Image (cartoon, rainbow, N blue to C red; front, side):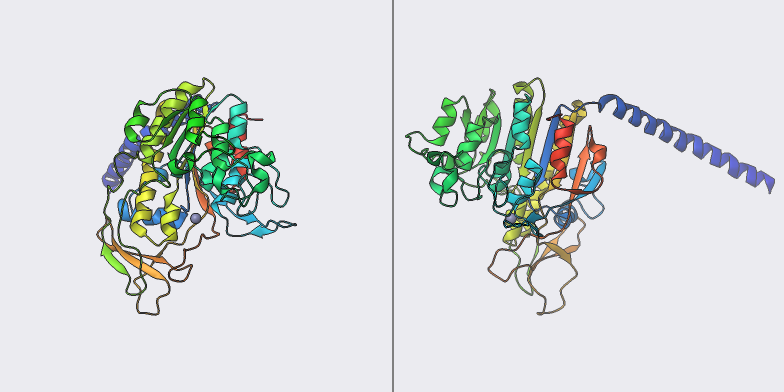
Length: 442
Ligand SMILES: [Zn+2]
């Protein structure tokens, strides 16, 4: 009896020595590595999945890597939740529980809540609010603003532009913002402001808008950009070769092409079962990951001080609006690949804070197998990596209408200096303060 007990104790000691001791040493080395390398941030990369709520992340994970798999954006150690609400235009500016991309991006870009159509301006009073990117430029950092959407879309716009309505994207689209027109003494359209700000790296879609002639002039926005020192590129090869402190990449007339395709969701009995068709993006348009890699290379050379880069995966939201699960998931996975580029960069540049978040939730829900024709909304059956059927439902708008954003809190994840501050429940305006503090912008 005692012999068996002694043997058991001996075994336990062996287990302790072989597992617990190295585990403690490993944890200790991780801690010292953190305290050594994570002292002061010089670089911030803010990854923004448009409409990428928890439901959309789970959907992409289930489909692409399996329910027990992990995406790159799942691997960041610090995680919190962000409330995304906007405010009403009229006083007393009560909450508007479901935000637009414009108000949400204005929220983290300026630290102030605004109403749903505004781009970094105050609700009601229409004052311009200084943005993170503007503060970073003033402090000597290089800046980048990249997206899979048209560069004049709400999220990239809010980083640098100030207009009273998100539709005021180009000189010919200023109807909703007469006071913002250059001829009225305003800062001009979103496209004009993006160039005037001399953001170091601007990559995305929007060639058509940047081909417009400026107000009271004869040059196009692209030509004006060139006279201001921008290298303008329009395809992947051009982007790869581009050098210099200012690069403007316009890879599509409007929003960039999608990564995947598949059938849209339909009312009962739904679409599918389907497996998504991948690799749909034409090779002359770079992926978000390739744009991120290039932006990092250019920004590294642009300023000794460091940089602030915003990277948006825009069409997760756009494809959810039109109930296209494969396209939506494909964009989420492409966004995740861009996050991986950021994480790899941070491995060799530990002075980098990486944040991954969303601006608002979207419609997609993972539901049980629908039983009959009383099933509301539209849905699709997807065959996942696990080999199971995944039922994706879209039911926040009637058939034929755009599906709606939702007012849920969304995930924020972080790694790098100050990442430990990303925990608990935050407001999207707190992200402004976090980045200001991290880069010492004030
Ligand atoms: Zn949207």
